[in-house]
Image 1 (cartoon, rainbow, N blue to C red):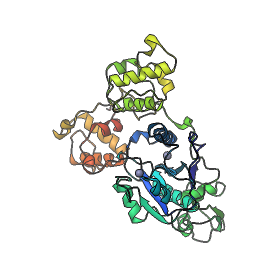
Image 2: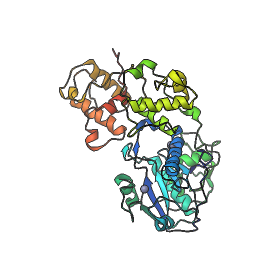
Image 3: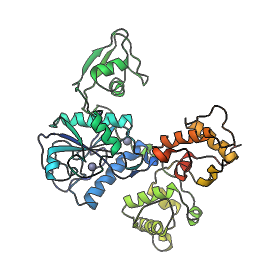
Image 4: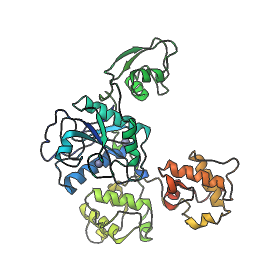
Length: 409
Ligand SMILES: [Zn+2]
Ligand SMILES: [Zn+2]
């Protein structure tokens, strides 16, 4: 398993010791219950999200520590919360907290609501780890025994269908590859994911995972942290939003960059929002930004709440996948329903194809067709939308993420 210990994600110290738990009935599964912005997808941002959750539980709820025993991101990394042998504060009340460990999947109630395959593997790992540390066999949802939506219908479906169960736990050992064996077969035989076997054998295997007869492989134990794996690459791997220019803010933009900025301001303790942060620039953004400028030591006109380059660079706003000005603005929902013929439709189609969402038999071309709609629906699903939110009619959020170039021939 890929395990990020508290020191790996820069956890704060708990306010007091946790009540010990030696054994219990099993694990309860949770989700974050908040919106997960698709632009927060880079793994380098997952540690920041876990820190934010810890802040919320300690500062917002007054709890001694992050409430969960373990957390799992969509990249399959298991983050150590209170860890094993500790009573959590997530399941609803003391009795429930003692009866089951709490594992939180970092999937949301909006935005990214899906449960990717790597996350399922990570939840299995978390459960395997806890079973090696006193957990009983049960796997249930937060909603079992406590009135809540958590962990959401999709994840709860996985609780019910058994896919989160890690199965028989391999304890680690060597394997000599026989004739005709593939990594896939070995993975099934030991119930250890292929990626982990590749990571545990850097001298024998490359990322293709091609094995040869006679090869001696180390098959790592399930539910035990992999040695030498780097579960939390440094901030160097994080891309930040370049300064959009002072003028851009004065035009009162509506952009995911403003949401990302707001989230960072809140994380820095500078939030002056009554709701949000959201994409529309408002006085609350300006007030919050002024607090950030004061925090940096600026005063007077230099702390007027209008972002400048120096304070922006220091805020380290995660890159949201676009830079203002270079892309076609959202033409409005109604426009697409008029079945337009426009170079914008061609440019959109090319971007859909580039994203692997093309459902064109010919084209794309300037005339809006059912093929455009089918392709756009694939894009919406790729962003994690489903149902009516993935009906193929462009909305502003998915449009901004698509980044349709303004000047496409
Ligand atoms: Zn929950
Ligand atoms: Zn991650």
